[in-house]
Length: 278
Ligand code: B12
Image 1 (cartoon, rainbow, N blue to C red):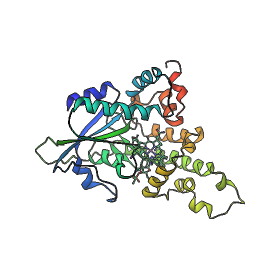
Image 2: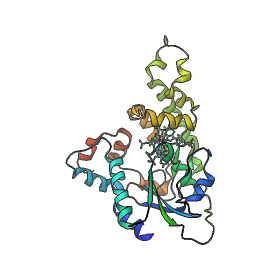
Image 3: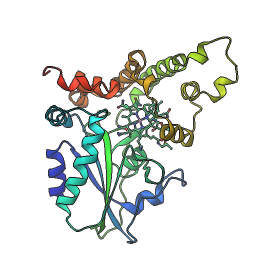
């Protein structure tokens, strides 16, 4: 298992946590979320894979060496490299890989998974998980499940993490409220006084800003539409970045993404890969 983590690390994925698949299936909320495949075993081995800022120079070099850049180079890198590494490391063993972008029956609630496996504390005020070493400066990429038994003999019972920085909640909420307000303002129909007033009841952006969208509605909207332009708008994403900064305690300040990486994540502007070195 250590070797697999080391190989992932050298490809930019410095978070690799083994966990017992059945634990997520048992603890997932809402219960209607799809379970992870167990390969019909009583105890099955899965890995939660993610990255901190560690991935950025590796990803940048990879993208620069490509003949042309696709629309989502980071997603493409993840979708190509992780299966390759799994195949090379576990030859002949059946596996299933589910990504943060996977939908429908393959959807995994990554933040809940990270929280219950004590990998990262899920700060709901921020809508981000915070990691003991990386703070909020990390993302998940995939869950790899293998047709192998979970190796520990003792019961799998991780001790939940406690909130590492409860003092941040007030400031985080302040920036999140600014974000919500600007999201509501992003919808032209919501801004138009002559528009049908019932529009707001149906408008995903308005209701997101209002905080009334349910998890199920979000997933439905996200699978069908995935129009992210409201986040890509600088006036909006600057509030999200400010909330993330507010949730960064002193000891993890050095984990903050570089300005280049931040700009890429929030704007998805691929020309950033060809910017001069920072
Ligand atoms: C849907 C989704 C979103 C939606 C959320 C819509 C909403 N709630 O109003 C949108 C498209 C806006 C979004 C935006 C972003 N997301 Co997002 N998103 C997801 C996704 C695909 C599913 C979340 C979900 O439905 N959970 C299940 C429900 C039942 O659980 P819940 O506790 O109610 O979950 C809520 C939170 O996850 C929250 N949420 C998640 N992201 C955001 C962003 C905003 C702005 C808001 C208001 C809420 C919110 O919305 C969920 C539903 O209410 C996950 C990946 C995954 N498969 O888990 C990534 C994920 C949660 N997102 C992530 C990230 C990083 C972002 C962005 C920063 C994207 C970016 N540019 O890099 C932004 C801004 C996030 C922020 N807080 O600042 C990471 C979080 C990593 C971490 N450390 O926790 C995840 C896990 C993906 C990943 N690659 O790791 N996201």
